[in-house]
Image (cartoon, rainbow, N blue to C red; front, side, top):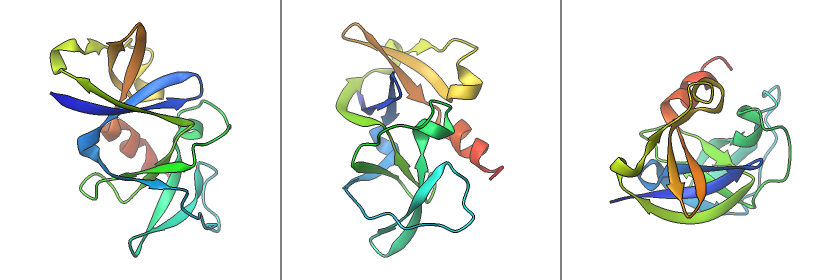
Length: 138
């Protein structure tokens, strides 16, 4: 059974497989990146490596808002990138057979791979490949 880290983006629940996450960092200082696109909140020092911090809420079109004080750092085999989200909610176990297909209109813009029903709510599984591919334009 796999696990998801569940977080909020605007008013939506999203999840990312724990296998894609290297660490969740508590309140890292963020440093200004000159001429960076608005979806980058800055850069952080992560164990001696400088990582850009992506405002996932803004990059997926949920507008600007509050961010959790914790930052999600992706594993190096995915990308040298950290993600800022509205709020972290916790870890949820799931089985692949419990996943439902995402609505076709949600897939491109919101980077949703599939949907997981959980305790009366829906969790959108983040399509990390689609998200990283969309960032190549920046």
